[in-house]
Amino acid sequence: MNDAPIGMFDSGVGGLTVARSVLDQLPHEQVLYIGDTANGPYGPRDIAEVRSLALSIMDELVDRGVKLLVIACNTASAAVLHDARERYTLGRGVPVIEVIHPAARTAARVTRNGRVGLIATRGTVDSRAYDDALQAVPGVELFSQACPRFVELAERGVTTGPEVLDVAEDYLAPIKAAGVDTLILGCTHYPLLVGPISYVMGEEVALVTSSDETAKDVYRALASKGLLRGPEANEPRHEFRSTGDPKAFSVLARRFLGPEVGDVERVDSASDAAGARAETPGFSLLPTAH
Ligand code: DGL
Image (spheres, rainbow, N blue to C red):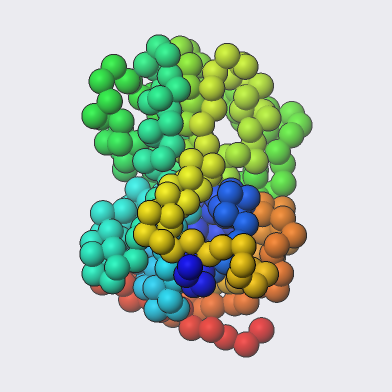
């Protein structure tokens, strides 16, 4: 048994949809989660900036002794996956799980006509990370659409009603026209909008989200390396931190994850967005009083 927490991070609260699935599938595990709300959203940022921010947060998580890292953000996964495996798995023996390959694998398994849609942030679509993940699968064609307003709507709590339906109809029209039978929700926020997305796409289109599939990969990685925390352990304790306002984070986090979110502690990012642009991460996370 390994008592150390699972380290997870996202640009903000979106990754908590992945944390929810991890806690559902692995109820004895402890999670240390960082939401980089001071620098999020990552979707519109340059991929090099995202890479730098993500590496800094993962450095912090690994320094705090996590036993496994989960990049609980599609945009960050697209930006940093290969570097993260080299730096943390090869360099420090910490396995890294991301959210893109689990969802891509499932979509490839589920599709019957080989036409798969992807909705995601601009950063994820432009990175072509899903195209790369599906490239090796014969007979699968990917149709991608960036849906930046979905993140803003989910964070405002606008997940039903005419506004979200109008936006969904607009974004999804080209994907529907492409005749996809499977749609990847390639952004951590989109599971909150699954009602309107499914309504617009029609019930014959299968929706694939990253969260449940990623949690299965987390289980597999921990089980295969003998790192699981078992039922004999004490009641799990989770830690939630944000680089921005902890109060605002905690309100949203309860909506995205649920009652497990207790007190949220703030961690400062030492760099601003300009520092994040540097090639070498110029960013460190320092605990501050709140
Ligand atoms: N978590 C991000 C993702 O899954 C969405 C929010 C953002 O743009 O940072 O791509």
